[in-house]
Structures are given as structure tokens and as C-alpha cells.
Amino acid sequence: MPNEPAPNHPAVQVIDVVRDYPRPRTSLLGPTPVVHALRGVSLEVKQGERFGIVGESGCGKSTLLRLIAALDRPTAGQVVVEGTDITTLPERRLRFLRENLQLVFQDPMSSLDPRMRVRDIIAEPLVVQGHPASGERVRELLEAVGLSADAGDRYPHQFSGGQRQRISIARALAPRPRILIADEPVSALDVSVRAQVLNLISDLVDELNLTLIFVSHDLSVVKHVCDRVAVMNAGQIVETGPTADVYAAPQHPYTQRLVSAIPTLERALSGATTTDLLPSKGETA
Image (cartoon, rainbow, N blue to C red; front, top):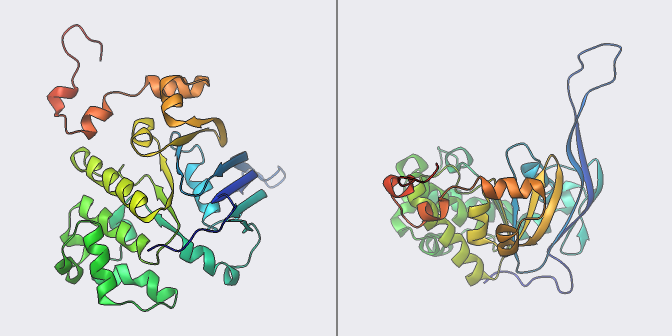
């Protein structure tokens, strides 16, 4: 069972967050160039909500996630997790966050240590947090993500991409978090296994009563998983609303372009073949 959520607080609040990164100087006399990764971003994620963040590469999605997870700090603004302002908290006071908020990254092969057996990879967050890393807990997690118990004796390279992402999900769930952040969790996977991983995440979020923050560059994938979505462009949120409404009737011109660019991904997620996805005669590609 996951930990009980903190009462009467949103899971995550981001308030007028700005994140600037200095770039290397091109002139000794000129000002230091600055990249404005986030420009006054605000959002609120409720307890138990499935919240999507969508936008093209470079729009600031991953930067925003790093700030929510306290892997980076904002230049200005506040990040509040379950009622605690983490904006300036030192690392020694962030243990509650490391236990209650976990991440699943885009590329499972690069996020799993190739030198470690799967059972040790899954148990690692428990060891780091000072909890007992029992074999029973590892077997329970492997079963929860659809892998056999003997998978714990193998190494990451012995699994397919979809199986490695299942291992990443098991590792993230090990300390029984309340908030799960998934950063492009299916974009590195074959189309044939994307739906399986998306359905697994969706089922586990329901079963464990988790808050999900799901990031993708593809609105169709977010629509498959999330109740509400924020659309990001150039470091700003340009539109927020129920996913079905944003998908059906986008209001901002950027969102309209995103929706109009969607091909037939939903059919691909449901198992359509390449032939099924090609336009028929008389259709425009």
C-alpha cells in the first residue's frame, strides 16, 4: 500500500516559476547570453489526478519536471509539493520528497545500471532511503509490472525495451511513492509495446492511488492516460484543461497545430499495422 497522501493540499503547485540558464560568453565585453527555459510557469496538480504536460522538444517540459523533483532549482518562483515549499530546501531536508515522489525516465537502458542485477536495481531506492530491501518486496514489484520472479537474477541488457521500462517502473514504485512522474516513458519504445506500457502505468496508478504527472511530446499519448493536460510552448503554458476538451476543441493556435499534426497514433497504439496507418486512395497523407 502507498503512503497516505497529505490532506487538504494539492500534490504539486508550481507558482510563477522562471528558470534561466547562462550560456557561454561570445564576447568579453558583451553581456552573458541567457537561455530562458521557463518563463513564469504556473500549474496545480490535485491529489490522485492524472496530469499531462505536452509540447515539442525544447519547450521546457523536462526542465519543469527537474524543478518539481528538486533535481534543479528555479531562478524565481515557487515549487510546492504536498504543502511543503521545496524551492530552497537543502538536500538533507528533502528525504520526504525522495520517498514520496519517484520518476520513470525516457530511455530505460540509460537509466538502469548495466552492472547490476534487476533485483538490486529495484531494491536500490529502498536501500538509499534506509528501508529493508527484502526479496519478497522485489518479487512483489516484478509481479506487479508483469515480469516473472526469476527476472531479478538477470541484467538489463537481457531484456527487451518494453521489459526494461517495466523494470524502471518497478524501481520507481519500490519506496511506495504517492507521486509518480513519467518523462516520455514510451517514446523510446516500439509502437507495438507502447500500449502495453501505457496500460500498465494507468492500471498501477489506479491500483495504488497515485498522482501521475505524465510528460510527452504527443497529445494522443497524453489523451490515452491523463484526465487533464497543460500544453507548453517556448517555456510557457499556453493552454490547460480536461484532456478530452483540449483534444477536441483546442483554443490556442499552438495547440491547434499540435492537434492537426496528429496522424493515426491511436490506431497504432491499438495494434494497427503499417498498412493500416497508410492513407487510403483518395486520402491525403
